[in-house]
Length: 262
Image (cartoon, rainbow, N blue to C red):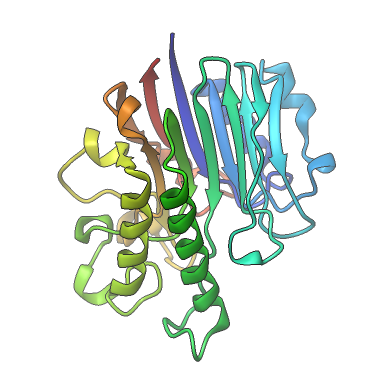
């Protein structure tokens, strides 16, 4: 049975509950993975989501920061979470659907503003987080799995508005791109979005700092949907809901979608 999955850094699920409800009503993905929920699990506003048919949730949360949640119309079970780099942050949660597919929802550390681990502890934490993800996938290569989330790296030259101007900007530096590539290779992950949309500029994040984000269009593709090779060919219909970036009091990220015939 086909199902559609979306991933979205919501930048506070309580502040933007109305935007989540709008997405669920208008787009109706079967599964919605949220990052940066900024809420303890018990304070996530579930009632409205449940009224729209999203009866199943697996989440990890903390007060004011980070937080990941998987909302689903389809039954799923909690498949655990990992604290890569031992940061004590709610940055990963996994859930398993009845068809045996495991969904991993990640919020990789942003890494601060200075791309130097000696001068910026947060950048080192980001690299360490990716290294431990890589090592985990090396140790136990995943199968029948989907990995989604705000990975906070735009890996390709056409994943950013200007490759040359962003080479020294956190999220597109060569060392970050290398770390993400090693993580992807370790799990054999297929970039589903680029499998479906192989050419051209593609973004999922636009800074709040731009006076007119749409006209400036200085975006980056920080949000990703990957799948293991055994199910990647079942993926299709990838898209970024750019319009959501223009909703009232929006997140600076737009939702990314893919459909799987599984």
